[in-house]
Length: 339
Image (tube, rainbow, N blue to C red):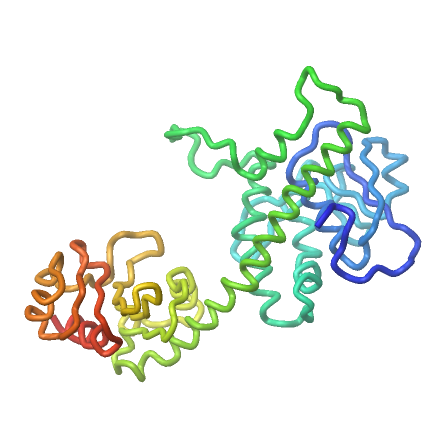
C-alpha cells in the first residue's frame, strides 16, 4: 500500500493539507504523516514540508513543527519548552509527533483497517499493544531517551531499528538536498515505517489477539482440568506465554492459583507437550520445573520411572517434556504437582 492510498472508500471533499517541517526528517513525523492519511479526516490530504509559519498556518493539521500542542487547533509538536505529554495507561515515555498522532487518532486508524467499530474492546486492546510494541520506542528515540542507564556500555551497536532505517534514507552529505529530492525520500521513509506499522497491526489483530482469546478460555477452564487451577490445557497450540502473564495481572489471579504447567499438542510431531510456566516471560527459571529425577530421561526408561505410558522425554532443565497422548501429559502434570 503506497503513501497516497487509503483502505476506506474515498469521497470527494475539499482537500486537506498536512504540514510538517522540511529538511532532515525523522521516523516520528514520517509515521505521523502516514497515520494521518489513514484517518477519515485526512485521507488523500496533501503534504507541505516547510518551517515557514505563514505556510504552516494554511495547513489543516501540523505535526513535529510549530512549537504548539493543541488538539483543538490540530497542532501536534513536541519540541516546545515545558512539553511533557505521555501516552498514559502506564506508559511514561514523553511523546513525539508519532505518539501524539497515535494517541489521538490511533483507535480510528485501527478500526478503519480492521473494519470494526471504534467501541469494540478489541480496538482498545490493539491500541495499547501497538503503542507498547511499536510506537513507544519511536517516541523515546526521537526524544533522546535511553533504553537503559547511559553508564552501561552496550555490548554491540544497533542501527537496524526502524528509526535508524528511516533516518538512513536522508541524503548523505555529498548528495543532493534540493526540496524535491528530500521530499521524495521523506515519502519513502514514511511508507517504510507506515507499512511496518500496518504489518504489526495485521499480525496482532489476526494472530496475537486470537491467541489471547484461547488463553482466556483456557484460564477460565483450568479448574475443570485440575481443581488446583495449576494446569492449563490447550486443545490446539497457541503462543500463550506473553498472554498468560498479562492476563494473570488483569484478572488478579492469586499466586496460589496461578498455572504451573501448560499442556498442548505438538501438531508437527503428532504428540503432546507439558511445559513449566516460567517465573517471568523471558526467564529460564520455572515456577515449578518437572521433577529432577525425570530430567534427561527418555522413552521407555522415562515411562518406567514415572509410571506413565507413552513418555518421550523430559528436558535436562525440566522446563518441558513430551508424551504421545493428551492423557499422558495430563498424568505427568498431576504427578509433578505432587512431587
